[in-house]
Image 1 (cartoon, helix red, strand yellow):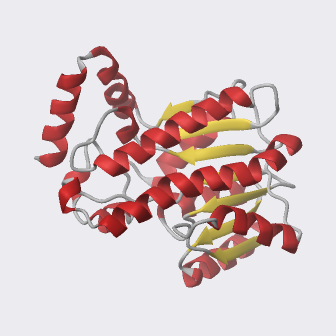
Image 2: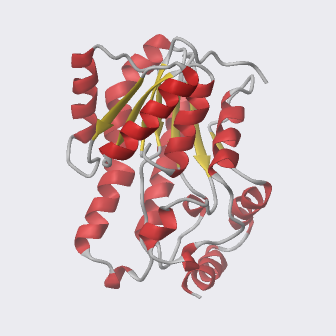
Length: 263
């Protein structure tokens, strides 16, 4: 382990109004980082910003933004540039899922999911990456999922979006390997957040539930290793379930995932 410097840096966290995003904001603020809090619910962001300012003496900037809108990432970068806010750490946490056969999914839901989980992540990353690499004091963190490691019938689009996030982040870790920037994808299993309220059922949860502090602490500790891995799966049981599909026939992996997710 080595100690990262958080004081004197600013972290931008998407999906910061609840769950993992809120916990990322708390842990970074606890270690002295200023934070930019991004989500759709401004009232929740303002409440969290006030708490972080009071408890940790940091600057916390709430910004309401809908990442499902095309160009949201570039627009956010332009707004922060106009405000004179430089970002050293980008935490791409915003995302959502839905449960059920793709034939039963509303087309608008699928489009919005791809926009938030994939397009916005790529857009935000490309917009901020030059500054992150040039500064070198922070990190690029993306929240993937154990769903990224195999096909996920009944959550087909969600699993595919997280496979994209994992692949993109690992590739970026290699592309930026000669810089001081730390790049990490963290893949949790089911987490006790509002995620499953949005999904609409806990049938989509496979494995033991983790808490947001457990997942964010796992991510932070991975970042603070002397050599940061390109990705980490949070939780021992989740690591085993993520690795197992690599050693089984693809058809068997698909059938197993289908039974687990569809019931």
